[in-house]
Length: 448
Image 1 (tube, rainbow, N blue to C red):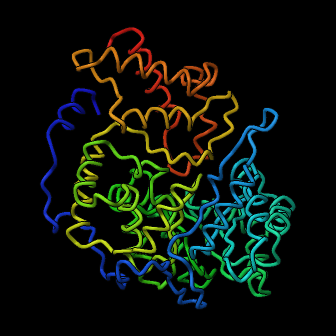
Image 2: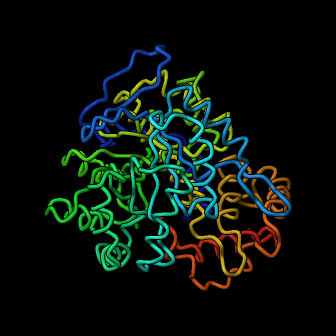
Image 3: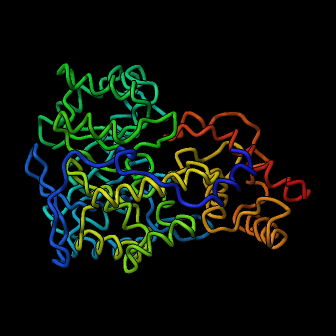
């Protein structure tokens, strides 16, 4: 989108949309929980009767601290958060050997093992992105038991399949014998539910779900990216969540939701959108809209949130203990807000850090996060004619240097493309880095 088109659109006011035009009303509404009950909402897994909290704890964003120059998980803070979550009814914890440079599972294992095993469900993944050999994949699987201090997994996922379709799936899990092994592990009870997390196009999803339809492999559950933006406005390289949801719903397959907040961006929406949300629900957080959206759909078993401190944990528990499904009118309102959000030239990055480490040291997610935050907070210099342009320009450049060390900034990207295959959002990372670098240079040269 051109800069001046962006100015015109964002200054044009809210778009008027009819409820019929939005296409996002659910086929079936979840059973409403009486507001004010103060009890966690649970969904029953129809496959095995598991009573799962509608709010799940995603362990990809544990709090980190600097320890002798190394960033490590703050175990004391993790323990406190896990204790609070379990005390308030959260019982689903999702992790991976790939999260936080391999530290997430161990931290989860330490925190969770302090509680009775029947008080929580563990979900982890076979994240064999780098080495798909039988030996490495099997070792990863075995290590997860040790790290998580358990002798069975409640929910086990093939991690981030979709891109490349069935051919990539077979390379990572079939040709090395892992699918045959994992199916036997499920039969033995060491895996109680076997599924996959998906990022990709509709055609790639169709290929994977066809394996289920033909009886080649049975999926007990599927994890998808779902939020009120990606419901019908996913990036062209990814399937809309409405399509994935409906296909899984038709087959009766339970759904676990990831990225309900789009990497936190739906908790920090642009000011004009936040104002409209607050006008409707002054006592509720901006993030609560996104979680209520996911919980409105009855096939959703659990909605994951990667919470880094107690504040979002407390707020999210409040949302799901005083839960109200969205009405059709509120769904239409959110669709209107999405159209306004789409006018902002942000990068569709969820801060998952799968692209890291960059071989050239570029802080890819940090650059995108700084850029997106400036836009969403209204601190985005757009043109020299803009009010307070010089102040905004200086603030952006100073904060950029403070947030991202000089040698890790966008201008040091050599466009090698190493990151492209790792991004679950299929973001053209080198091109977006180039765009941000061009923007920074225009600010420095006063050529906007």
